[in-house]
Image (cartoon, rainbow, N blue to C red; front, side, top):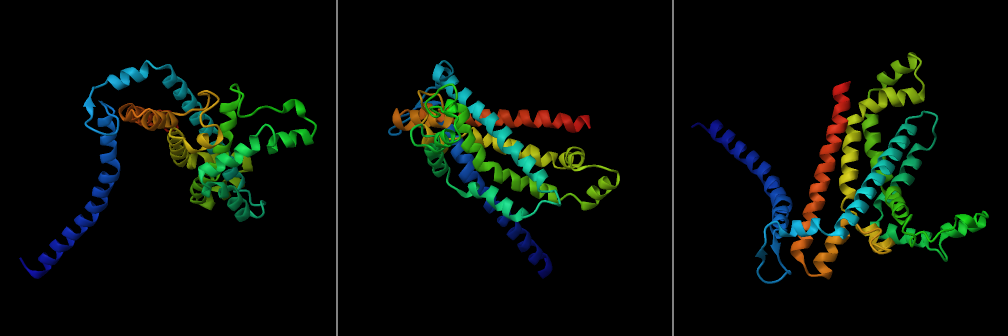
Length: 298
């Protein structure tokens, strides 16, 4: 083996090592904790001592619990509402940002993106102050404009509280998906829009028939990220209502925390956490199927 072959061999070994290091790190921080959670979901464990293997008993117990289905319904509603609100509004804003006559685009982007950098717990407490029935800004505004009939106990009325708490979550992350979608729109060649304008396409038609199909894959990613991410919502709800009144705004993540740290049932807490993962994967697969059919239709 000559010197050149030895040098090439060393370079290949170095490349393999550079590739393997992040791969091993990914396995350590992602796969190992996931496998550990799945294992403990099959056990009865209080956090100390030896875990007792019980098989699928935790899952069977969970499926028979009425509270589990209630918090699952809450979580799915929040996931749907936030996906429609965040991604839908972000898409509309991204379309508006393509209008040439719009001034101060950088300022608008900065203002809309600003809530994203705030801690969710801070956002929750700010909106809790806004919704407060006694001295909150919302009810004060309604009194100022003479609409006392619209005043509500926003965080205490079970009939509306789940819709009310979804608004701060939607508000905070619109800017994130706006930036992602605007990046996809900016990658579309300007020649495409110029040809459409020559053919007489207006702003609305350009958005629907040109921009939307060309950012469809990015839109699909945004929907998957939003729907899956909202499945583990926790901070906003703790700050706003702590899951109340009753369990009207409790999410699966809060339910898992309750079983794990309040009841000391780490096995059941892990079971609920795995259930969150399964639901998120099912939602992602459903989005892939539904949005994939459109591409096949085209």
